[in-house]
Length: 294
Ligand SMILES: C[S@@+](CC[C@H](N)C(=O)[O-])C[C@H]1O[C@@H](n2cnc3c(N)ncnc32)[C@H](O)[C@@H]1O
Image 1 (cartoon, rainbow, N blue to C red):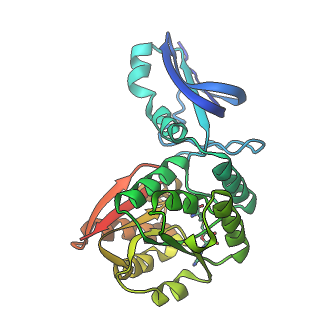
Image 2 (tube, protein in one colour; image 1 turned 180 degrees about the vertical axis):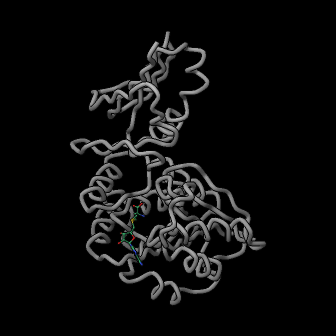
């Protein structure tokens, strides 16, 4: 019997779960945005899935970064026992994002990010950053790639109340959006230091050993240089994080040889093999590579 898989994406304000005959749901939805029917034999969802903000066209991409407030419903005509084993992968990614929940400030910053044409870190990755910032009791964080402030809001929410986020971006206009987001989130202006410019011009000007966490989300082709700078900037016990190392699936697909993918592969190897680092590759957002500086 042909076996179809329906994937329905929408936005939700709450999360629940249930398993019925041939159906698995992670949802309590406000509305259905789109329904996509994959034909028999197609394997559409083997990595995280993504959709976009309300009003935008949802995207179905293998290995791409999940967005906020995603809910997912998978229906199958296959046996529920089989479905229970094989069809929860994408549901896990969706659940990790919906689990966090994002408030109006993050929703707004994320919408600005989408309008500007850049990809903000997903909610699960943001939550991991917030957790790490809190775990190291961060007083000083350096960020490459301010964007419109999604990652910055998560970092600030994890830091100590007197902590300062130093954030670098080529584009002052994006930093202005981020400034507004931090303000809307209730952070005093002195909690963030915005430095416009190229990361590799700015990072060498920051002080040695003074940072508890360095978050790299700028130009992936420069990843190895960011790593070298991060090792200099971090105190022992500090954490470095790189967002987007899955490269929307290209990292693990050998046919991709472009300079950016090659640079990220080198980064992933260097971090794993460095005797100065204790690494973990977290499968949140588009791959968050983290390491503690020994
Ligand atoms: C993926 S976005 C950052 C998203 C942001 N971290 C977030 O999650 O909300 C990448 C940002 O890096 C900036 N960027 C790209 N190359 C850069 C470079 N060489 N130096 C500084 N910033 C750079 C871009 O202008 C863009 O705003």
